[in-house]
Length: 523
Image 1 (cartoon, rainbow, N blue to C red):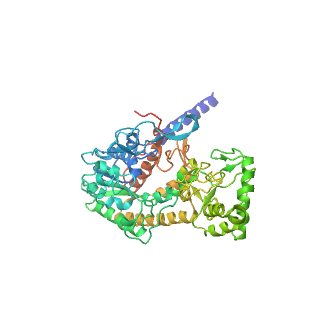
Image 2: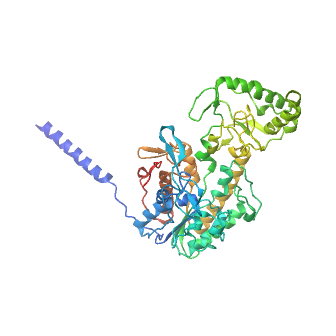
Image 3: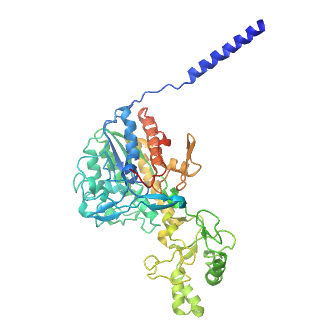
């Protein structure tokens, strides 16, 4: 009997301990407070990321899932006010200028083919139908840093010539207004600034067809695909933050990731050619074709180039494994004249000159090259007079991009171009960090976040987000802009930085509530 009483006593102690443990482990809900920040009037400045651009278009649902709009919803619990956005007319995406389509509809996946294609339909958002009122979200797709200070950037009269931005033209307060003035005139109490990506992005997505303008302090002379001079960026960025904080507003700023880590640049492999399909992104060439190419093109090219101490540019294609793409590398010494001379005895002067012009700077791609996502549609396709780089459509058998005809500058980022992008990005980030420290602002390290997405991913709940194209969940189908879930992640890392700096207790959003892809039809 005593033994039974003893075990009953021990059991009761265990139950009491268990109950006490449960009580202690129950999380105490921390009330949401603004800390030293004031979210009453929140203004967001930036580019397409701030606007909510996704799947290669701006559309209503994407705007509703923009990270500034998500932030404003979390700010509301800490005293945040209304947040207005210059919404598009529909969920089709695209733009009209005087009834003419100037931007296409959004992308979606087609059935089992998993091929991004444009939503069928006509855009209904007309640039000339100006929106009245003021807007909290001043994110402008396509804007570079210096555009936020540029007068007439929202003048609809300049849209057709490229002197103005069609998205800003829809909602600028006046034709001559600047984005920064439209922001500060609203007397924000809190702001977010995420700008600078486009200062290198257009250069990157164009395959480096622009120019690195480092040393040129006059943005008026820049081309659309050029890299902004870091000194210009530093001056512009300092002026932007000075204007935003002039009346005591607090805010959060973000640095820039290496955009070459985006899926737009990491999805298409450098060596997709093979005798048969061996992978998702593979281009099946066929054994017979490979043998013919080696005998008629790659072999003679390698022999000729070897004579000029450049034999490492070309190797025979593999009949069993993966082979690299044929590309043009404008950083190479141009051997057109030498190849023309070498091929003239066997091909004749005219054909030899053609070979010299086409292959004078040709080489096979390497792991250090980045093939842009849009090049995928051109690999194996026949070059035209417009995109061949020589003004004519090449005849067979030299009529397959990347296989028997070099991919052009716009298709590939080569190491020298990648280095230019990295150097500029590092300089911009140094400025952003310094200004954030000087002004006492919250700082978001998006560069570290993208690095994490690209190297193992970020886990939450039962999900893992990564930068893998389409399947990773973080990026939309254009390979550059985030998905809705990706924008939710951005909002959360902004919240972390704000809480850390201002002792606020803003809550994360549940990323599982945000889709990784939008369906073909949206209401």
